[in-house]
Length: 474
Image (cartoon, rainbow, N blue to C red):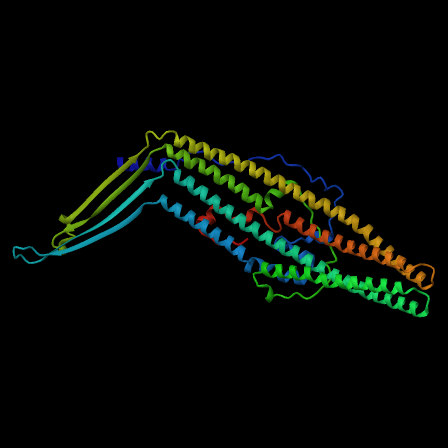
């Protein structure tokens, strides 16, 4: 009865854990985004997907490429194996909570010099040892390792989102290059028509030969720009190939037009951002890890208690080993405590506390950076949309100006330099028009990324899932 009471008391003690319990810090958050008033989201935002966010761009090629990132990207595979390593570290540390058992055996056959025949002797022993986690130091370490694994899972999700956004960005840039190539092709065709008009005017004697040289120079410049535009496109295509885990030689994306519609997503309330971004989830779990490590260091103040037991048989000859008379056993307990260590333990505790304080500030800064990124995206989208309206009108006016200038040149009322000036203005306006559309699409991609894509903090494996080694995929 006394032994049972003692065992119960021991088990009760093991439920205690030294060190502070973790509490998520409360942050003062804004009630709305600065750019939110007047923010009008496009209709596709109502059906924004929770996982495959890129499908709102309604581009079949992009929809085909994006899923390959999580499957084939070598960097993400490395991050996945880092997460699996963190899970195994948890399993190894949890093993310290349980007793360890061992078996040893030996047999010896020998003969004496007195002429007595050979004899056989042997031993067989079983042993058990257990370092009792009375103060919870091991359990705090397990807590820290679990939080570290959750950080690794959040890092994997963040890396996946970053790679997906990078691919979407490269794809937007590639289609912008396609649009630039199409523009230069149209420009070359227009300049060729202008050159023919000038040629006719020179032949008719109504224009100077210098006009012909000017028209030809303008055409050759447009042709050079058309050739150069292919260089940027090739680099974007190569980048997309690597992001999908393939060498550039294995990927060829047919030419296509620039994405016409700019999808938008409502930003929601600022408080929801804390649950939507994987980098914030990683920073929060880092705080939990550092908090648990304080308990590990505090546990060093308390003695280590280990229990051991040995039981077995020893006999000669070996055939009688398992007789009752051959049995042997021992029980033991070991208590160790450092009496003086020159302030090492107190310094280790302070260092752990400062590491926790540092993780709090890192968390706060991560949240602030997230708010800044979303605000930038919202303001960019608003400003670019306004700019696009004005620029579209500028292109329309410049196109009309070129048409008038050509007619007046053919009528002999203006010099050809007037036509060239209007054509240069038109090309510049058209380039700006493409650039603004590209910037709007890139800002849209950035907003999806800065809002966390399809991530939710609930996607991070729980402590129970990690300790059960359940699979995780971002």
